Amino acid sequence: MQSPSLSIDLDTLAGNIRALHAKLRPDSQIMFVVKSEAYGHGIHAVAERAAQEGIRWFAVAYFEEALEVRKAAPDADILVLGPISPEETPLAIQYRITPTVVDAEHAKALATIALQKEKTLNAHIKIDTGMGRMGTLESEDDSQIKAILNTPGLEITGICSHLATVDLKRPWLQEKQHQRFVNAFTVAEAIAGRRLMRHFCSSRGIQYYPEWDYDAVRPGILLYGYGCNDPRMRVQTKPLLQMKSRLMQVKRVPEGTPVGYYSSYRTTRETQIAVVGAGYADGYLRSLSNRGEALVHGERVPVVGRISMNWITLDLGPDLVCKAGDDVVLIGEQNGNEVWADWLGRRAGTIAYEILTAIHPRIPRQYR
Ligand SMILES: Cc1ncc(COP(=O)(O)O)c(C=O)c1O
Image (tube, rainbow, N blue to C red; front, side, top):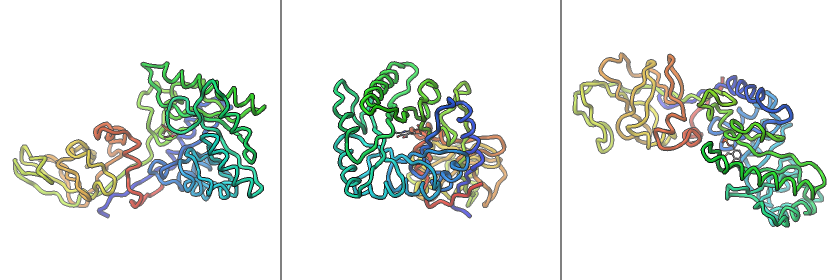
């Protein structure tokens, strides 16, 4: 096969889950974030294996993703992080999917549908403590929280917020958000007259603030093997996704040979240029043109010239012995050398999240 393929090691995922469980406070559980096709890894296979490894809670961005998780994990609890629409409410009740309500109006819209069906909808309240995205603003005025909690047809079972910042040089930013979260759940629980499921931290918060584990943590990137690049961090995990392809042609060329669209690269010596079956249409970002690196026979070789829709060109140097059909690792490891999504992200001016989620869903994923 000359187009790229993905291999995903689910045993590594299981190891990552165990590594996190071992470090979490015993009364805190993992709410595994599997949105965007489990960060490009494939939502079904990832959720199914994670459920087998003891994950009870999953979080997704959109309602349709929750239905995917339900197929893979029939007994799990599933939280939709984004606001679902009222039309989705009957299916949410039927499939035991928990939405987050973002304000009193949203709560009422969902609850009205639940009441029409003579049902109660379980939901979590999302508090905006500083992300400035979704959720009810935490403020002196608790009327929004009160209105949400008193909405007939709605049973609020949890309360959450999302950190915008975990900056070790400016810790007051996350501390301020945390304090607002404490204020919000204190008010909400007083109004409700019962304890709610509290959850606050995503991967970076988990690493640096064990005291904020609460009833659940919401890791995404950490369980996919990233966000632990400092060995002193609380939890160490390993990447599970590798992207591979093949050399399609290897060609010896003289010094001064232009490579790719608009000749952005020119060879500086006699060398070998190899063409690899992968391009930006597969999700290998074009911003890696003249910046990426790949592994061939265990050697790190530079991506040269502009990345085109379906092909990448590598400068193999004059001496590497290889031929068309040989393996190329675009993300992963080979003979002890490594090129991972966080490194590629830095080279491309982005983050591992984008490198992983950009990988086209059409590319075959082989699970081990
Ligand atoms: C609300 C919420 N919680 C948790 C996460 C997981 O974040 P991370 O992958 O950094 O752990 C996300 C991801 O964007 C999110 O939006």
